[in-house]
Length: 545
Image (cartoon, rainbow, N blue to C red; front, top):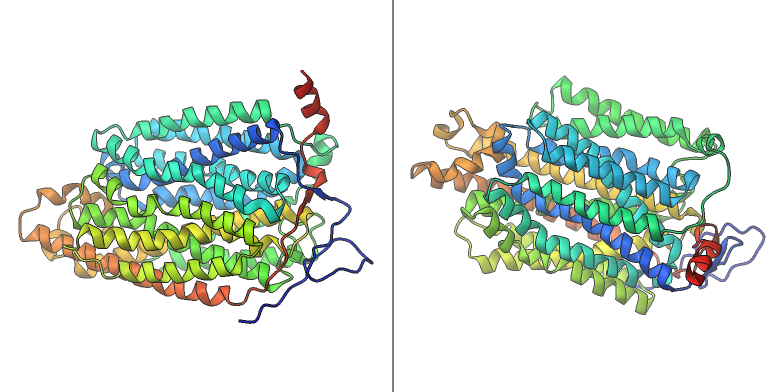
């Protein structure tokens, strides 16, 4: 394919720009000095990322035990409640970071995440647990968003691939140890400590942030800063997101898609997003999501790729452990080991992918390769049977993991390359919004497919029991106690139902590859936004002291 170069959008007016070189605006400056303060901040961001990633990677392996212990049937809400609140808060986190500064917002996010984790660990019932996961999601969304925003503030896009890859080390550690920790604790009936462990990492990250995160803060009184917020836009997007995600969570699982309880929130959510776009484009003084972010096809392509990739990633992460436990009778600890094909490829390959972008100053070849590998990997997952060998299942994971690792790191570049650095906060917050919104779709679509397929495939002797298809996750805990041939029939029903999920994900990977072909090459910027750089006076005073 012939390479075309798209000119990066500049906020400068009246200056000619070379299409092959980004324009440096008045708010831009060469990259930040890499002193010990920078690396201290970077370490604190890595710890914060570890906190969020560990929670995500560990809970899916422990979920059957959690649902069984709390006597719940709404397993999909354990993840959906977290991602719903996280998604709804994400756009606001970018606006808060612009109005109040990065430091107070990320410290607040860590505090909320810690409180939510403590409540999850102490949950006496499933409803309380889901409410705690909702609060935890608000903090988790802020952590994800502010971590990415701060890195964007301090590291030029041209160099960011390497640093995004280094952050991936924390994800590598979490994804490698999370399933094992979650499985070990669940197997011993101590799953609550999975959430209490978050308190340690959250406190550690907050201490690093409080001491080392010396960034410039916007001037103005509290009232002036509050006035900069797009409150109407925030209200609309939170209401629309919540309504739409409730419909996605209920549809086909708790209620039929034709039910008014699904169609009403679905319609209100879609209409709400339409109203949000109209308001942001015509009335918002400080828009939550500036329409200018969608002014070029490369950025739009990056957002869509992020959304699709997130659907596939969460579907695999969430439902592949179920294959090992429900279809092959693996224990939670053994499932953690069986997931090594993913855990030991996603983050390490992300580091390599990010470094390759930094070295080559190109991102399209990496994204194309990532989509091709993900398409192959999800295709291989569709071949899994009850009696498939470990080599087959781990190999399919590994191919998918390599593709996801590349996409996770490289998907930032088509979004940010055409935009001015002054747009970082809003652009990155919306990027993380698309990622978490996609994760909700991944869990919800997978749950809908799984439940609908199980209703059709589970033997009548099983669906007639009190724990029928409506609580498929809870049924995993009792599979070993079922007599043969009923046990084998139930395991086969799970395997065939999960195969349909993999088929849907393979189709989405094909769509993602097609969308990636619409990108144009854009030169990567070599400057950062001086408005959000390190506070040189405070940093200098610390270093002299």
